[in-house]
Image 1 (cartoon, rainbow, N blue to C red):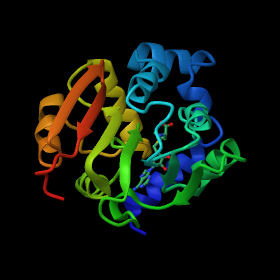
Image 2 (cartoon, rainbow, N blue to C red; image 1 turned 60 degrees about the vertical axis):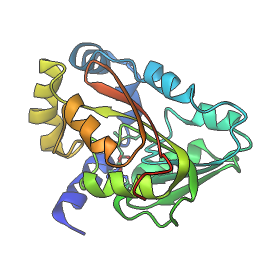
Image 3 (tube, helix red, strand yellow; image 1 turned 120 degrees about the vertical axis):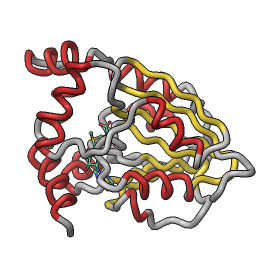
Length: 225
Ligand SMILES: C[S@@+](CC[C@H](N)C(=O)[O-])C[C@H]1O[C@@H](n2cnc3c(N)ncnc32)[C@H](O)[C@@H]1O
């Protein structure tokens, strides 16, 4: 394993006990982190992404990275007809997700690397990626692989950090989160990201809440993979 991957794994191992608390705005530090430094509500963003996955969705869904399953567990209990693969690099985060999804036979937790997905081309109807692309070390591979495993007409739904929208968030990412291994550069502006996405998808819809981009992309018939 390369140093960069080791660092990312170590960072998420270290945070596994407080990750959920930090992101749910509970406690003083979390209120400061989410409310002042980010000024985003991850739950509201999650709800926006999930409007594109109706409760009777019955296809194959890849959730990468699933993390601890914090934002997705409730919805996956409702998506009874979906076949969900929940993949993450960190066994520590996955151990929490496995506990959360216990008894849900529509969810399979898998340890793996988004840059080398062990799936055939076009295997999934939808890919969901929450808070992943700012952490992934090889972002080109992550974009190519998530697009490759999607079938034509398949949906890519994602949210992650973009730079250039909010100074105090950019500072925090650069001087704290990236230094600790929770985030990994390069980071893009909204315009740079749009150019990258058009290489992979026919339809690209981007919106943002402060420094978090919200994406809905569709793999068109003419797309590369
Ligand atoms: C900020 S967490 C997001 C987890 C979850 N989606 C959420 O929103 O709570 C980032 C996750 O990316 C995972 N990760 C980092 N590099 C990865 C890779 N190459 N392949 C798969 N997962 C990776 C980490 O282990 C971590 O669980």
